[in-house]
Image (cartoon, rainbow, N blue to C red; front, side, top):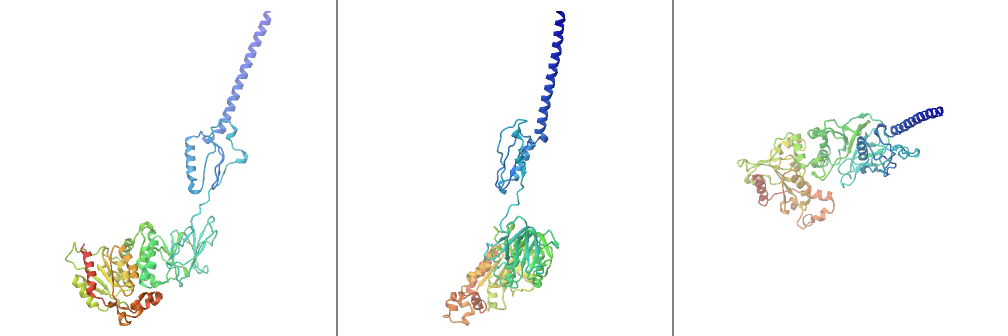
Length: 499
């Protein structure tokens, strides 16, 4: 009996040891499995997710709601990069928390992570045709410009595999209906000839020709639009020109040199492929000899243009004389005499009337050859006065707060005269005065009777077109100013300088 108890006692000890060992092994296995599972779900502290990203598509997949702080920041950045501005959306389809080891946390084979990077967003057209007078193209990226020796016509090409196809023939002059200027091909393409000249500065492509050579049109068609287009680059821009006129470029060299630090390129005689990151074709244009500040780059205005001209020609006077501060001075009045048509026939009488009001009179015909010399004369004066014509364009050299007086010829030319010089003068900080002559002050009465349509019905002549009108009213007409009738204008100019 004692033997049996001993055997049972030994067996119980063995079973307890086996049971303890089994429990120990089981616990180890459970811990090992747990660690393996945790290691698969916490690699680099990142939750595993599946995204399908594409234009106008929602993301698909499931993502753990429990994320480390750095993952949250990364996801916020990702969401910002795929904003609605680029037609991308990124949404979570499930916010249900996942338990470690849950198989739904892992992506299925058929939904393997796929990220399609967004294509560059297509912008608007490379050219703007909304202005009734001009065409303007703005190309940014891989831009290649060919001279005429490389192709049938000069061409500007934006190389891009993602843009829609565009191709235009653009007249690079601010009057797009000019027949004496060749057009430039402007287009997008997926490939183009290799660059032979590569520069990082932008290019402006424009044409000379058209009405250039006429002093007024030099400013309103080229020089002011060129300033409006190039000013924002502060000299870091190059001009690529068709219809080169070397004499014209030399004539306005002080202006050209202040707008660009680089020599121009003659596109008509170039066989290079000029590569640039940015190119503008044609010049910005708002209206004749004016700048619309609301539309201008950096909000520049006519005051900026006239200041720019004074700097280009080193003109000393910023403001006209102030008789309030210096009542002893005699303001200078520049009388643009005109030796051709629309000239004053009684200059001595006009001079005496101006001197009687208190002006010192300077008589000169506009010098359209030596611009710098005449600009100095204009800048030395406080008033410019003349019959409607190109000579009054020199008002851009006047100091601020000066006076511009335009004499409008007979008959029904008042509106044209106002449009030509009224807004430019006022926007340049000048007082603009216009005097419309009577029929009695026109030499047309020496050529036509009062009953002739030229005198009695001017609109019948205007309706026959510009050339017919110009032949009579601009080329056959001179002015004999009625100084008594005109004197109030002189007094008003003097009163302005006294303020």
